[in-house]
Image (cartoon, rainbow over all chains, first blue to last red):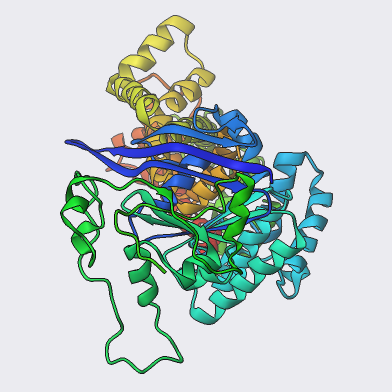
Length: 340
Length: 281
């Protein structure tokens, strides 16, 4: 399988007046064509910053180190002119809040069409026709009328459909969806997830789905990466990970998902403690203070992200790892991983 | 963009206060352009029989005459014409330069922003009068120079306002989304930043016109602007102020025109802001 996006040893830090805060620490990952990669982690785990760095959207005081290659082109040190050729056409992004991500004074049709005019040099009239077709594809009712409406005239769910449509205008190879459902209510959330699934079937795109919600990712992703305090702590095929978490953090996260069929609990389970504050220096495992399995070793020596043997479940798609591609392989950063 | 203008026009049309103001502005502009033809007197004709006479209908001096017997109706309208021209041209210059400069400075930020703003501070530190005298000495006295020198100073505040607005718009997520869509810096500034700061710009521009009209009259008063026998509202008011006790109409007529014009421009600017604000539609 062809690797689309490969991130190697990416670190992102923010310069503050008295100290540097690292948000991402030596993250390496790869996205292959047509796959759906889920990234899960709490707020502040650095999951968004990894892809902000890839898109060249880091804040002015941020410094990125390492390498981000898209189709073998280095993005991290690319001039904005080269970046502009790629982002918006082959590599696109869907943002968290559809209420504020559309330019308020431009009509929906104009904003959709502009992507084509900007990247492909299509004429405005042709681009407008393509915009209408795209609105129909992302299931926006009354597409023709919507074209001449302003963003504020649309509901949140519709706007997110428009944002998704906009990201698909140039038939991208990779779409990065950064918490695409977080700002929406639950029923709309389900519709947007269904739309993303349909779009994956209809097009050749690969999808990176960033979320703090395992349930959202679980329904879509082929493979899931779990991030904690700026590092990847576990990576596995989605079904594998959900069935047998190896990292205690993942296990705790899974426990937090309320179940409809299980016994009725008085209190929903939560993770005790707080994630390490940004800028805190960590000698050992960042999760150790909250980890039920932590031992002395965890506080001194940081566990590396290493291959863990796959669970002995015959149906696990993690078996693809045998092809030499590290992507499907199960990896976990823990001295004392859970055993299935 | 044209559709945005259509919608704004529709909202403008339904606002009666703004339409009144627009009517007054157009009325004054039309009078300034064509009014002098309605009256048999010329702007520079001296009527020795009616020196400093009261407004009256029978002698065709509808608004009275000044100390030299020149018809105040014609002179006020010609003065309004000059004042409007100076106000419009200088505002247009300050608008263009100020928007471009402010938006670029605010959007690029960092060191560029720093340098551009320091330049503005240096320029606004120059005394205007000294600057105008300096230009007059070098290029001789003419009206275009007046436009130029007022415009050259007027854009400074506009640039500051646009920069401030741009700084806040730049933080918005739709700008990030535009960057992520691969839009270049120039495209983002022109299409996504400037239209979103147009509200304050329009409001400030309508305040700039009266400010510049004032500035022009001030310069004219000092003998650096419009020269006799030509007139602007400013010179007429200055002249009238001297005769205030004996011939109050010499102050009240041009003063009334200026006040009506400024009030109407302010109301119009307010209405334009409401019309251009998509969110309130």
